[in-house]
Length: 102
Image 1 (cartoon, rainbow, N blue to C red):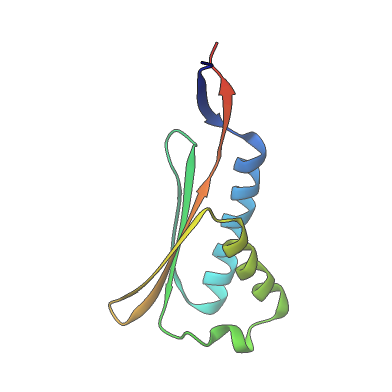
Image 2: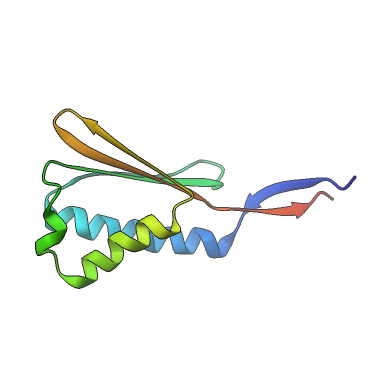
């Protein structure tokens, strides 16, 4: 049986960096709370956004709607929770690739 290990995928890490940048732009312009981090081992990244107005996308520019859709599409897991009178979205991104053990 072959052995595999997970290592950071440079392409996924770069893509996640752009998703972080785009999420920060939306959060700044829409006055949302945001927390984003890349785990120490670079195998996972998270973006967490919270807001109190669920209808913000109705009046948002089309590029923000596209960014929001990309955040959802690229995430491996998405959790949505109502917390402290706000809606919180947590996006989890797998930044790893499996390679054979040496």
